[in-house]
Length: 135
Length: 137
Image (cartoon, rainbow over all chains, first blue to last red; front, top):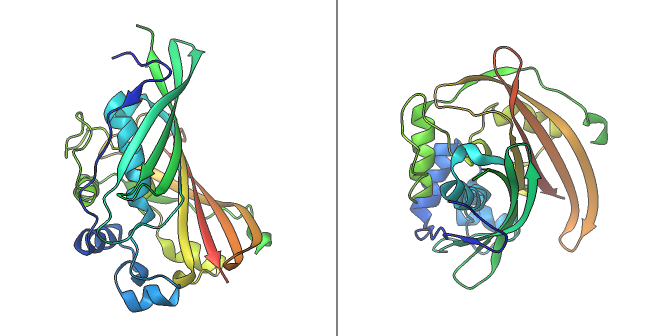
């Protein structure tokens, strides 16, 4: 597969990030922060309910890139979490190639990724640099 | 808090455990990369190193005097310099690489950047991760 500027990568559409999924993430990360588990703790931070881990956002953005180009092609990725994710949200990624620079043996592509929820609110934004070998 | 910038924590060992990687894939609930397998020698999904606490949050939070209820994860940047495989044993060295403060709409905010280096036994750095955490006060 050869990518060019303007190409869109296949989207990652997530399952509903429900409370069980958030709780599972908390346990598997060994994250003791109750803001992900108990509404009363989330309220102390001024939140209407528990929130999902930012890790969901960074991971889905990363997966959108690595699923399309292959794990070993990814040189660098940066993802910023821009809005909270709440129980029941469904996220989708949009990734597009925005740059192509010559490199030693092929090209270094720049890929911009955004992650949005079901209401179109952007919850994450990222940029990846991936290696594309010469065809 | 700015005085802690440049503080480097002592190295710890971390093994890319296949069980942890599989737990990560299950937590996301989406189809993993086609080349991923839950076995030694397989590729590691890139997001794994944004997810797994390889060092232990305790010493880092203590050093920064973080109150869990007022901190949020702001995002990460990772450089993959060399391939990493399931089963690899890496040494992990976090460093407090930046602290900045700002008065925002929701109060006083402190941004902390932590840069974590992962190295092989021979000292080759394979991954550099920078994560951002925000504390509101």
